[in-house]
Image (cartoon, rainbow, N blue to C red; front, side, top):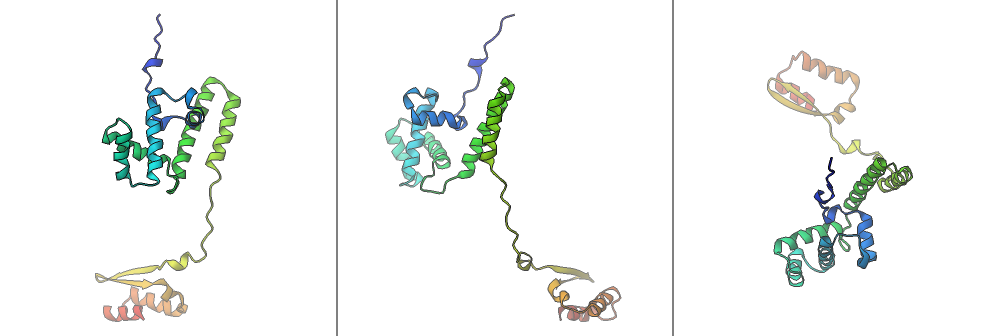
Length: 200
């Protein structure tokens, strides 16, 4: 039975899907870069866009990219968007995006190592993944958190709604609270009198 080589039919990875190591190798040694040839131009455009974004608004970067490269305005917009996600430099650095990118790449590496039986490499990738993810941050409990919230007891009496601040009830003696509850269960007063009692 004839075997079919499916390698040439595999979908090509976009620049965003390239591994961290491939991008780093391309930056360090562009002449012997592992980055696919069709992505090198896009990579250079994205780097240029990232540098220009330090000094110009995105709307001013588009004409500069069009002048420098033979691309459409739509391609320039896509390059700028990717540059904003990857190379924020002077702007706020999107650590979450980079972290997700590294985590995704490491998970793929672990899966590949597992399938190929490369146990040492898989264990090493697990250690790196643990470092990238880091420890879960436990926020300190705010001692005044409960003071910031106001809690109400909502009472409905004869289609009239009354909100009672719990802090008002908290300071009352237990016999007064009992009187209020009894008045609500067996009202001897009119609705207006009950509302006056609750609001005092």
